Structure formats: C-alpha cells, structure tokens
Length: 352
Image (cartoon, rainbow, N blue to C red; front, side):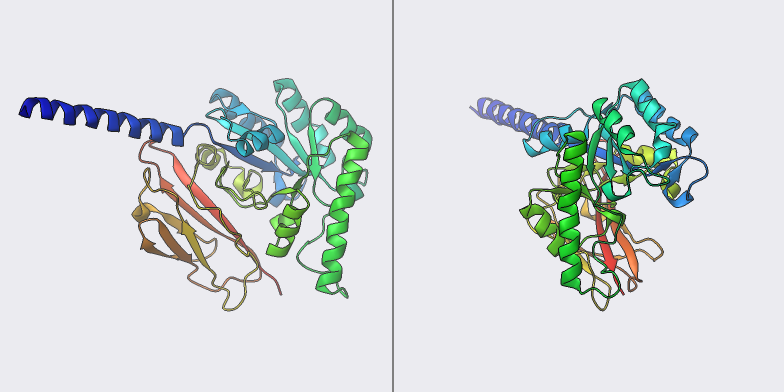
C-alpha cells in the first residue's frame, strides 16, 4: 500500500509539473511584440532623432539574421486584442513624422525585404520642405505601408500655445486629431485609429478622450507591447540617436513584458514634489524575482524600490524630476530564458 501510495503521489507530481511547465510555456506563447521607433534615416539630420542609413541597414540585417518576423502594426494590434498567438520574435517597424529622407534608404530597403512598416504622419506638414508629399505617401500606402495619425501638426498636446487656455488648447488638439484621421482616410483610404503622441507626451484626460473616440495610442517609452500594455499608452523602443546602438538594441528586441495589472491609468503629468511614486502590481511572479528588479531614471541615482508584498512594488525617484520628459524603466532577468529581461517603462512629464 505504501508503494502504491508513493506511486500515486509521484504520478500527481508529474502531472502537476507538466501543468506548470505548460503554463510556463504558455506565458511565453508569443503574446507580445517589440515595436521599433525611428524618425530620420539620414546622415545630415538632427542626431537625437536620426540613424544613419548604414546603421539602419545593420538593424534590419540583424532582424533577418536572428529570425525576427516583421509584422504590420495593425496585425500585431489585432492579434493581441483578440488573444491570438504571435510569432516568438515578432517585431514592427514604425517611423514618426514622415520625413522625405525615408524614401532614399529606409523604404527601399524595407520594400526589398518585403517587410511591412508604419509611418505616423502630420497631414498639415505633408509636402513641406523635409516631409514626404501626398503622391509619395499614397504610393507607399498602395505598396503596403500603414499610414497612421501623428496629429495635424507636430504640436505639444499637453502644453498650450501661448495665450490659449488649457481647455481651448485641448479642444483644438482633439479637433486636429480627428481632422488628421479624416485626411489620412481621404488621401490613402486607410483609417486605423492609431495615434502616436508627438514627443511621447500625453496626460490622463487626453488618454481617456482617445479611448472614448476608439483610438489606441503609442508613446515613446520603452518595453514590449503585450496584453499587459495600456491601449492608450503603448510602448515602443526608440532606435535612433543614442538608442541606435545595435548591442543594446539586441537586449531590447529580446525583452519580455512584465505581467503588470493594467486595470488603471497612471497620470504621467507630475506635480510637487515632482518625485512620483509608481505602484506596480503583478498578476503573477513566477519567472522573475522581485529582489532582482532594477529600476532606472536617466540623469539620477537609482530610484528607491520598495517591495510592498509578494506581487507589488513601489518605485520613487531619488531626486525631483526636472522640467520635461522622464521615464522610470524597470527590468528583471528571466529565470526560464537566460539572457532575456522583463521590461516596463512609465513616462512622466513635468510641465512649467
């Protein structure tokens, strides 16, 4: 009887182990994608928003060599929304602003590789000096490019123009977003209701309005996109300027989404004392350790990370945030996938 009981316990343990293994694998079952963000692909443009044609080609060749599958951004959105599987190495390529220099190097290379891409444009700037014109945009749209909304012009959506009240400015921004969507549909036949925040800046009321209007929105904070992401604060990895380094990009391309609870908005506009406390609650903590979570704030010492309980941490900057844009970036190594890191980023904005 003892031996029979022991065999039953062993069998139950095997089934439990198999179930846990299946669960663990399902956690990684292609439910996330990395979205890359570019601006200029040129040599003689502002360094902070540029990558050289050679650098861009190196990025693309790395994706090809390592077996990354480049998907259209609307496809990734649809799959995550409907809980459909994604390829293990899913990635999307996006460009903000629609600069004309994309026609010289980036777009020809992507067409040659047969890879889809998205351009977030400002219809009010189309055809002006350094921007693509409508014939070019229509042509790439016919070839499969996704054309999406970056606002009518490249304004600061949270910071009113001089002489305008906050409400008057918000009304203008909202109308321009709708007008831009209509113009893109008129010119290209595409209406994706995808917005990229200019400069990555937004506040809670704007995010709520976009949700009410049926838009999803992408920022400029880092991390992989997954079901844990908020649909009006979707992450992208900037891949130009100081972020064009291929060695660091390799780690970002392999990043995993922290299983955070996305049940509430976080107001990114900070108030005094300008040291916001970020609460991160996790649905489960199986593949990483809270003790191994590292958080960073650019230009500061490491922020304070407090473990509240087994599924909850708090992060606070060591110093007050200065005026402008900031991020809390948090990572932790995966136990099951050595060399890969969980990643979460929260944008902040301190306005004058």
